Image 1 (spheres, each protein chain N blue to C red):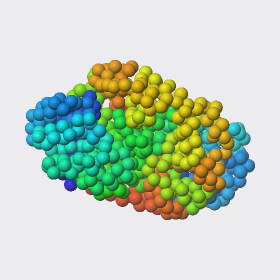
Image 2: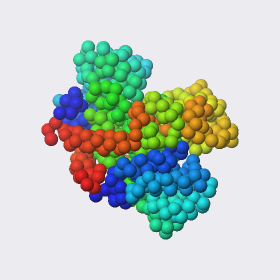
Image 3: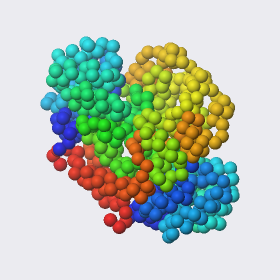
Length: 319
Length: 319
């Protein structure tokens, strides 16, 4: 019995993270149909666009479950939440906000709720708020990130100690070996972003996907820490931020430099120079753009092979 | 057969990281006598002090092997290296420099050589230099750190792909579960710092040890990035650095602020306000100051229990 597969009624405890400009109905339904849980990322959608994606996802998934990721800072949050109820969405992952604000309402409307945290302190708040599962996301994750910079290796045992809720590890996981590693640390399942952002079904631009699979170690960095810490590929825009910060730019100057729509420009429109190229550190380990079904098969195959290798590992020669 | 235990002729593939002001002969010999590999950290020792520690360590270890960690930027590096040969030291871990400079010489003098890296690019250089093993250390590690900020979870598979040499994972590992996790990622053994810094045999001050075991998530941060990235506990000194950096302080101003002897002041003398309190992010998971023998026993016990738990884990309900 796995706490995550039984909670969401899925085959594998593999969640596809909701990602701006990557995870529409096409990616989410592909993941759900392959035995994981696909999430539509609402962060980059107008409400009516989201409704369209939900309906298409439902049609594409048949009886397979899927979910929606909602950043709680979303400006039209009331509209979004009521639409999820109208459209009878069953699974909601919330992030970037207080889990107490919406969890009771979502639960009353029959939804299963998970919330994304970057510390055990917030994991405890999630439990108090009544969420069904916790996603704990480490420093290596792409896009918006926590301020404490706790890595997945340190964060997962810390959150595991603080709560008995089903625990989904996120940040830095793109392989079957990675799934084994976080399982050892106490996770019940995984949320994977970058690996799914770089698939055929992801709605990111080809230019973005190509740049990401070419990325090497050290090519992403956590930046914009004075506004909201964001991990992205170091490009011309990143260099501008670095220069500004090095000479002491404040929040207001950085906000002006950031402007609006940079994530869309980078990820969806493929402007590799001026856009925000949000992706996880683990993209250095990714070098292809396969269909989702192949990703899931490889994750399971490599998980099984890694487990077999561990069975044979002995920590002393004498054992 | 384990590549690390057979390379160093030890019982467990557990190396105690060489740490300034923590790892003299007392800590190193305790680790070696408990079945791991203790390292004397030369970074904080004058050459004649080091000779004294080597002789005491040898006497305390009997037939058990021990090693010495040498940062290659050490000002009296020639003196140190010749002393290691004179004292017939058998195992040397080098760090903070080019592995090509000293590895051939050390090998000619019959020593087994490991080198610490924070990227696969440098791991390849190590292999070319002829080292016997690689220590790959992630962003979560305490003290001096790499510039690319690659976390252990991402770094280990990356280094594993780049070399077939025996691979020792470091950074963020303080538990048996952590050892299982990095083993899954491809490591053959582990180097553990913080957990051993916070033992009875560590030569750090009681005030430092106490502050570290009280530390919570987010209490350490990687700072001083314009000089050499260093992970330490956020205290008054850290705040001074942050303020200076926020208003655009350059390398020269930061060097003046840092001054000399801050690590000694913080770790050895226990000045919690003005000293550098170098420790790994994983200190948030550590809450006691036991003897080394108990640490090793707990690591092995928790490793075994975690492996048993993994044997029972199934990634699908149907398996």
